[in-house]
Length: 130
Length: 145
Image 1: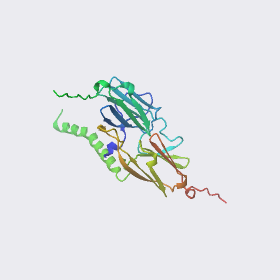
Image 2: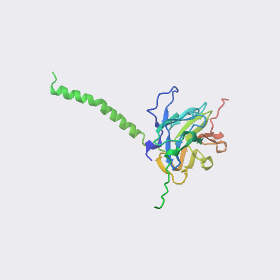
Image 3: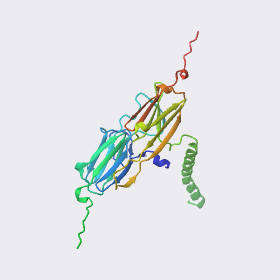
């Protein structure tokens, strides 16, 4: 991978925040099957309490707060990565059944399951012999 | 008033800061040669706390049981595998940005590590390894008799 891909991408377009920390764009995988859309985001440093998912109309916003990325009482001697929050916004093209969204966070990875609404699910049409 | 020579001189002056910038940029590019390679995965931060080194690394989504951390002398090796999550049959990837595959990184510390006392913690996708120095390596206080 090229150098740019390996490093965290700083978020430039995010709205300004009260907390004076940098925000980064989490790297995501998105895949779908006929029933749902899955989103997996790398957000090291967040847990279920500090992650926030919002779906308004078809705009999905994921934010994560990193609270204790620093070593308490320690002095940073050498640094290759910066510590900061995460924010990323997606526009979803399909109707999502928002009541059935499932989100889990494990080992700093957010996993979202966004089930498609009944009316947009592909339907199989049976052909009857004439 | 605006004779050609003066005009040319002014044009050149406009270019100067640009050229200096370029020179600075080139120096920056080449001065990094041979230093740490930022593309090494995982990226680490090294902290100093109470005479111990604390190495933190962001390695999200790794099974801690499959992570391999070893210490020998002044070398610390972090290895593991980011697995491709299997998904339900009939799925298609729309976007794939997360890295997958094996990784291994060796760091040289500025002291000999007490391998018995190394502690490693993996929380929220962040790995934290505390590395104390060996006793023989600690600075000794010498009394004046």
